Amino acid sequence: MNIGNYVFNGPYDPSKGFKNNFGAVYAILDDYNNVIDVGETGNINDRFPNHDRKDCWPKHAHGNTQLFILLDSNIDKRLQIESGIRNQYNPPCGER
Image (tube, rainbow, N blue to C red):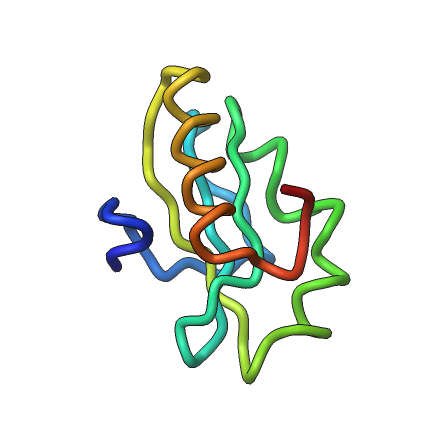
């Protein structure tokens, strides 16, 4: 899935964790590929499945929510990608 000129892997179920821990930029999209939320984490399993904004997602989603991830171990790069996507899509969940 292309999001903000980056290729994200997915979809994944945001209510489930992952076998391994890794750093990533993540995006929550709905059934119509609207970007509902975007963020970054150094440990994906610290963020999912107990994400602090997960209650916001269904309020703004059309249909189901899906998780897409872009693996990157560099925090500065993750923050730059997150900021760019947030500025481009202005997702309703999270802060700019």
